[in-house]
Length: 249
Figure 1 (cartoon, rainbow, N blue to C red):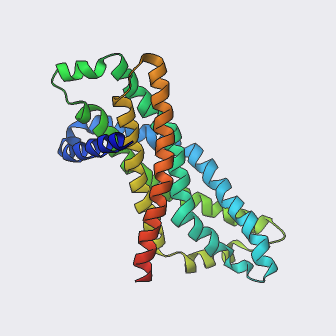
Figure 2: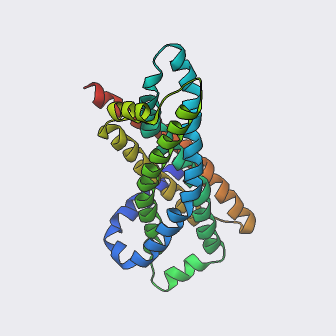
């Protein structure tokens, strides 16, 4: 475990050192950005719409029984902005993109394409890792913003349609506007950026350390997704504690 952590941190440091090479890899970065961002929009839209709807459906009647149904907009807004949107988008990207990264790089490793790159004096980190981590770090915050907006709309639709809540769009979004501040959205974006680094680095590391043929590729994909999700949840807890400490100060 400690060896894997050390290798992941070393890979992340080498990627940071390679950042000046990003302009040379701009074509691959745009290709990865399209794959991570554009092709994830439909799933992100469906996931976010129903997450916002479920939060409103579960919380709205409880608030209405206590005579504070008008506070539903703020509850949905805060929960999506600070927690649900960044975490759920990170899990979605870990399952969809992290697995693809690990499989693609793992296949190149097993079939000695990575060794061929080194033979041609091409650094695998510059060619394989840097474009993927750069693209995921750009795409993840944008997907989280999109998720927040769609989730708020989903919560608003449920608040209006459910007779036990009986809110108007104006009341719902007025309360959301009053409660959700820019720092709450920034909180979610900071988390999303940290999660992006975790997914990109862990997935690329698993790909680069793949051994054992097709079965090894399968193991690497599984490890990439599982380790990314576990690290996302652990990191989410500690980032939340730090940000709460700053808010209290």
